Image (cartoon, rainbow, N blue to C red; front, side, top):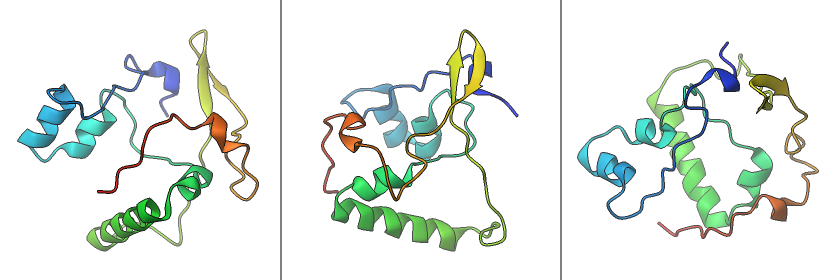
Length: 124
């Protein structure tokens, strides 16, 4: 399994949809939206902390759930009888180091104000 430090492109590309940006052009010109969003990473999965998802506004959560239902309807893949284990790693001096994930306990998350970027959640 490839670790975080193994990637030459371990930094995630800035995928903001600013006018004229590379990502905006990719979105407009083809159907590789997810590929463009992942950028130059070698990530095979998207992992999102439940505590942060639950901290999003209700209208955003509804749109997210609708998209996840559409995804589930579109593909047959192992669901109930399989699970994945997620391990937080950081790169220190070129070495992958396992860390305790502060967001792993969604019932008792840390103060989420430290995770907010100040970005606005769009309505559409």
